[in-house]
Image 1 (spheres, rainbow, N blue to C red):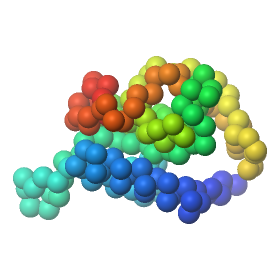
Image 2 (cartoon, rainbow, N blue to C red):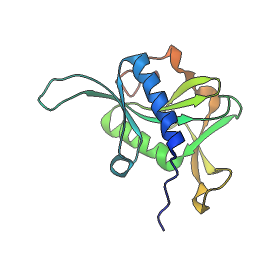
Image 3 (spheres, rainbow, N blue to C red):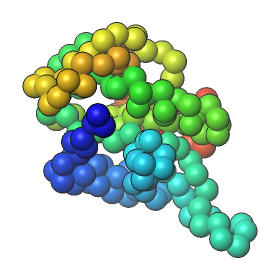
Image 4 (cartoon, rainbow, N blue to C red):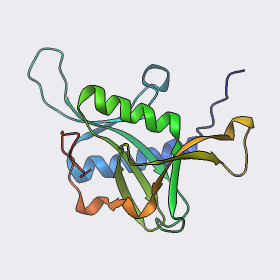
Length: 161
């Protein structure tokens, strides 16, 4: 049985708002990708034309989230291990950073996606279906940095957004 999609229009509207904020803040394009083709949500790029057909230089892969909690309400932030691994894999294969942006109630924050996570079973509450209990990547909430103090760079080693 394939899992139904749970991304609601409200979720997409929140992601688009975050993408617009990042685009305005950094002077870049933030584009939603086809989940069927890429298995990740967003890409950050800037407009550069060096070759015919090239419209921009890819700067980073990204996941955009909106949460109804403060950044430090919970010690850990959890993200599906499958999504974390896709971001990490793209980063390693293409030498571009993967960044997790989360708009908490106290601001917009980012975290570079790295191997620094705790692997454990996690569960979304309330459950939507039997797949809401799954392996998760848990990262310290205190590791998120405010977007206001960041700059997007093209190097995977960069810890800035």
